[in-house]
Length: 291
Image 1 (cartoon, one colour):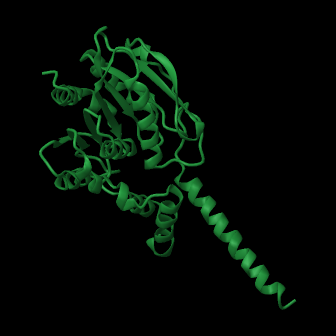
Image 2 (cartoon, rainbow, N blue to C red):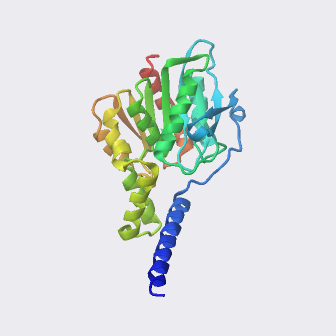
Image 3 (cartoon, rainbow, N blue to C red):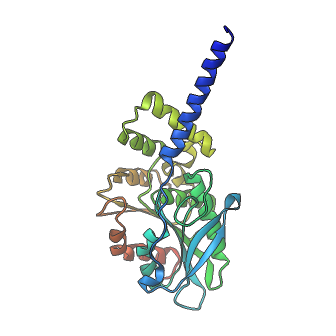
C-alpha cells in the first residue's frame, strides 16, 4: 500500500500534464473557416489546384493566370491565423489588373486544405515554400519575378521564407508581429492567463512542439537576413498587433530595401487593403523592375 500511494500520485501528475498539453493545443488551435465565394464572383478567371506540402498533405489553392500570355510576374498570397484564401481575394483583382499572376492558397488546417497535427509560423512558411515552388513552374510565370504577400502569421511566414530563399523578387508583409513571444503573451493576457507559472510554461512548451526557438523565427530578428525588397504594411488602428511592432521590425532592418507603410485600419481590414492596393502594386512593380 505504501508503494501504491506515490505511484498513484505520479499517475495523477502525468494525467494532469497530459490534460494541460491537450488544453494548450485546443486553446491555441486555429479555427477552420471554409471558403464560400469564388474568384469568378469578382470577375477573375481561375483554376482550382492542389499543392503537395510537408507530411504529404495537400493545400487547396486558386491560381489566377496573368491577363497577358507573355511570361509575367507572379505573387503567392498567404492568409493569417484562422483565415483562408477567400479573405485575401480583395488583393487579387488589383494585382491581376496590374499584370500579375496570383496564387491564393490555404495553409494546413485552414480553409479547404488538409489537416495536420498542428499549425505554426514555421509550418505556414513550409506551405508557402511549396506554393512558391509550384508557382515558378507554371507556364506564363516569369520565375525570376515572383513575390510573396502575407497577412499576420502569414506575413511572418513570408518574412521567414525570404530570409532563407534567395530567388524572391519581393515580400509584402501585412500586419506582422515583431516577435512570437510578445504576440503570445498579449494573447494569453487577453484570456486572463497569468504569465507565471502558466504562460511561461505554455511559451516553452510551444517552442518544443514547433521545433524552433521564438528568437530564431521572430520577424524583428530575421529582417536583417532578407536581401530582397520588403514592404511592411500595418494598420495604424490595429489592436491585435500594434503598429509599434511594424515600426520595431523596420528599425531593425539592415538597409534601405525595407520600407514601412502605415495605413488607416485595423488588423483584418481587408477592404482597407483593397483601397490601398495601388501602393502595394507600385512597390511590386518597382521591385520586379517593371517601371
